[in-house]
Image (tube, rainbow, N blue to C red; front, side, top):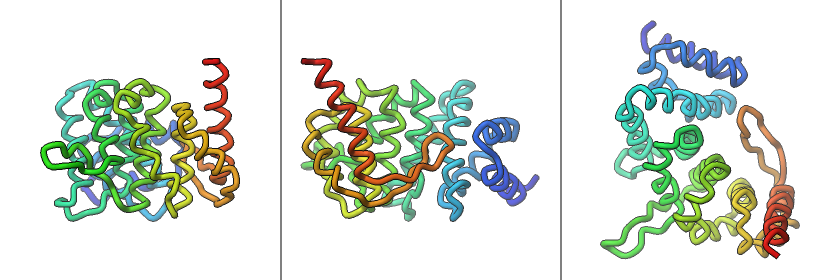
Length: 240
């Protein structure tokens, strides 16, 4: 197949299959063509195509890394470039794909998790510019989603990177999805310092929709805040 045919085949696969079928289909195709097609699918208008592309990176990149780590690093660096102002693009779907890959790959998480966290951080003074803060709400939502994806496996790493120092601003976002993902992340990491913010969120009934490992969930900020607050409370009870 030529590049156009490969792309159309993959779009059809992502649109018409559930995750097990997406995985088997992608893993049985030539890697280079699949990677390029998945990058183009990250900004597809169809949400199922878009999000299955995110999951597809999680299947494919760790498998590539298992054979040759440097090839997987090349893809991760391509993600970083797409979020760089100098790339000329916007990077839709990139933080989500990074999070999905690092959920599945220990070595890539060890090398690149700090970069995902850096997108929540201000630049800081010259010589200490560790931050790469993303201004666009849709990208902020993507970063928070990516952090939620890695949180169950990388909670200690995220604590070491002082994630709680950088996510407070998102609770005040004008974007409901950003507020909701901030609540979800605080709950997943049981960040008791945000209990007050989560209590405030209980009256925030703005609707949002998010992707959860093959499923689309329709919810509200209040529902996510309630779940998160319960998780924080469990931690506080365990420590008392």
